Image (tube, rainbow over all chains, first blue to last red):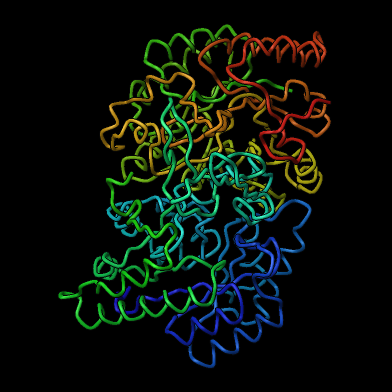
Length: 336
Length: 296
């Protein structure tokens, strides 16, 4: 693997976002269809077949790649929908599909042997034995690793597998192992695994009360804000709760992952690609984040030794971070 | 239907755990799952200790399955996984695809609930690799299960998590250590202080979740004792009870009596209430939010 080829993989929740990402230097964009076959199944987001076709045309004309996320688990009554999505991906000439379900990988490998397969982060593969399972069974070429491993663990994992590794570099942070979190369905009935959503907007209620502004998810109080506090989206693991009489962010603060300062290390490790989270975010977000990461990667590629994170980059990224806070997450072991 | 007791999800001290399995040897349960599935730092019983316990339980007439850790991160975790997979005596419950790779086409195994088997295609695939039993994901509903079982070509046994606080999520971060402002690597084994986990409530006092080290569970107790007829109708072969610090033996007895129709579902529900650490929920089985309780 060549570290100087590290790919910047940017989110495309819509055609404008896709074009923005390509125009500002994404090597790849990833998208989903307009249904529960992908883990950002939100109203007004994602691509119809024709939109996707235009997206692929636009990206390929500029020599970039398009990856299609089909990363939820096909539900028993919906197999046809996921199967059709795979067939459509092949027809559209997608550069790869990002899958989590072994049954679906088997279908893709058998019926579309030329379609490149990536293992989604929703596949929960945190060790090389798991990654090699998907490699041997279905020929996956790349795995996106859950945001729970320390960098040393990622290095160990890479030593044990021929599969390329893609890491999350920036954006919303799941503190739970992706694919192994049912908190959202416990509270609301819908989860990433089953419906492609977490803490879905339809379950959210905001309420002004004498005690402050309250955010609720299916009636459950996720947080309450004093007048001077900035309210955030009530993702249920990022609320303030009471444990033994102490109220705090018991699971995780509202914060974004930002690994910019790790870039030289990631490149020297031979990471194949860096993924930017945020298909649900606006084209303006995509523009800002893509531009900064493009500059950073190019700068690091020119001279890894003297690479330094520019304060301006951090300021730009800080503006679009959740709760205006950033963390290295699990890559920095003491965070655990 | 057969009755199973799942692996102990909490961190109990050595004597408590050994006593628990002494009780299980005499309990009205067919299958016993053993092993540490949550955290590699929990070491008061080592793999060899579990294998010794397993021998005693087999001698008492129980089927024993060794369950693997759900989150396999370090090389140490992988090594432990290899030792479990390579044990030639006991069937293994694979809770990660890494475990499946080590067991596939070599020895029959149980496909655990965190493998996320949501459709018949994936079920048939795992059965083809040697899964002789699968445990349905906790999020799955009765209707979805029936649909999988109707469409499948293979015939592994089907097991359902039917009693206990739901294991909902796994993380790299230890929330029990976090609560005590400790780092995970220096957690001082605080989990030992919480025999049924650490309660997390909303700011208005509603019990919501339970912190159990790197695992997050429901606060409410998923309880399908009133649904055993619908489990049977759906084609379930094995009913799993998850251990709690007290009364697990009595809970197994109630499930057994209800399965043998010596208790009505209503009688069983009313008798089990006093033995539970929290109120019941069963929403998942009814395709509702998991924390709801549907009284039929």
